[in-house]
Length: 424
Figure 1 (tube, rainbow, N blue to C red):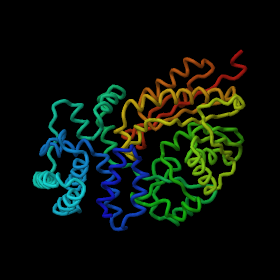
Figure 2 (cartoon, rainbow, N blue to C red; figure 1 turned 60 degrees about the vertical axis):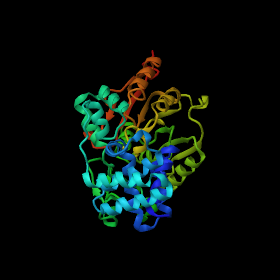
Figure 3 (cartoon, rainbow, N blue to C red; figure 1 turned 135 degrees about the horizontal axis):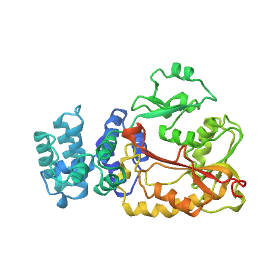
């Protein structure tokens, strides 16, 4: 298969089977010609990220409603190459896409040729929509419902900077495993590593295959986003504590919690899916983290034996992921109804987490989304139903915003459970 054929296959899986772009891309790159890997990566992420903008450009030269999806997918691929990939000659972008159209949608090859030649001639045409929200939606390829939601949630002044922050994929960060290496040793081994503004977060050049590095294979570094590190630091864990990570795989937070505890104490880590539990165990072994007990179990199912057992419970719930659409652009195209289906799951997990916290202990609730229903509203409802908990002022409830905080969108809330003495 050619590189562009693989891209078409990957986009089809993302759009029709709700596939995750990073996992699908990994499968594509495993079978791709090495010289095509850059093209495949750029096109899969780029077309997924800029879908609305590309459709606006394409729709100037054909009727989108009458365009079959396979043809539209090819037009998006061609348009992205013409408008966003300077190194590809326009003739190659058009001809290679038309060649693919002749195989996939033969009747649409003529339309494909005509539309792409028009785009090549005209270049990018400015978005011209009078309604401000609709303009922002198309310009930054964010669904209109989400633009309106964030406008209501964060205000007009924050809106465009927030949308713009998701236009580019974020930088890749790694954390150094201080049990196995010092910062100086890793910098000597990986001179391309850069310090960042974030505690324990180090930058690697974009496009670096981290898992191919011996430093990763031997557990001296691991991939971790600054927002996840921030959540772990706010958990307030200390050595000797008994901690529970209720949704643990693939283990980034679990391993960092162990480091913050100076590898003294005990962490209980739960994961629902067997294959992800195995991934968690492999990562713990790679990083030489030995204070963690893993269990493949459903954290939604309440377990009486864990009642008031942990000093700290960390709950990073399954969520809509709207804060990480820079890294996972397919998440912004999900059905809003699917997001609503997550709410009862999150509520059940939070109620169970509260029960497992010792008197005087802490509960850290986090998500990688920027959706009030999953964040502030969820925590507020929990506090109303559980008067034994209160919000800790030091952390409180906090949204991390990419344009403001320089990291992926995230939500953190830290709650304290009343001690027996306080309870009277």
